[in-house]
Image (cartoon, rainbow, N blue to C red):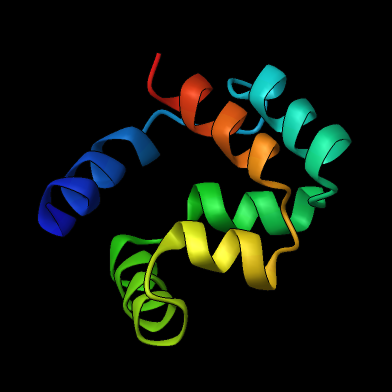
Length: 88
């Protein structure tokens, strides 16, 4: 559920830094083209900010997948690979 995602995010955010997440961050920068500034904002944002962003994404694109594929220009295979890595 969305509540579970935000709760998990709040716990994870306490321990997550760009240094801890270096391999994942490098992948997102090299393979997807994200910048360190964007990633820092995504990884370190407060829970209410993430909640508001997810609501806006849902309203505009339907799902995070829709957002990444449509607005983010992510290839479906890259999205599938990312999903697989995150669910390991």
